[in-house]
Amino acid sequence: MTKARESLNEAKVRMGGLAKAAPDMFAGFTRISRAATQAGQFSSAQKELMATAIAVVQGCDDCILYHVEAATRHGADEAELVEALEVAVEMGGGPAIMYAGRALAVFREV
Image 1 (tube, helix red, strand yellow):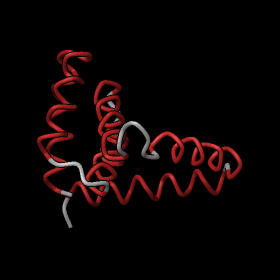
Image 2 (tube, one colour):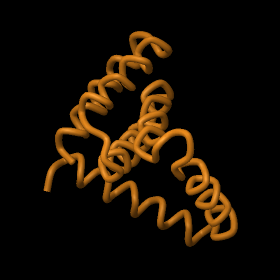
Image 3 (cartoon, helix red, strand yellow):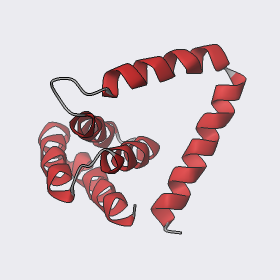
Image 4 (cartoon, rainbow, N blue to C red):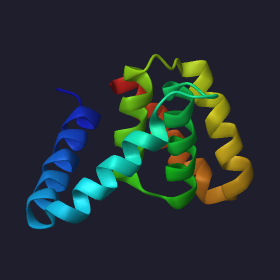
C-alpha cells in the first residue's frame, strides 16, 4: 500500500469517527458534498478537480488526498489535474506550489 493510500485511509477513519460523534452534522455535510459534486454543467471529475485546487490553496492535506482520489475515481487524468493545480498556484502563490506538488504525488500514488 502506498503512503498516499495509507494516509487517505487514515483520514477516512478520522472522518468516520466524527460521523459517529456528530451524526446529524455529518449527514448534512454529506448531502452538501453529494449535491456539490453531482454532474451538471461540469462533470463530477471537474468538480473534484476544483475541490482539489481549493484544498491546495487552503493547505489541507487530507482534503487533497480525498479529492484527488475522488477525481481519479470519476475519470480525471493527470493532465487535467495539472491544469487545476496551475490555477491553484496562480491563486495561492508560493505555498500553493508546495501543496500542488503534494497533490500531484498523491495522484501518481493512488
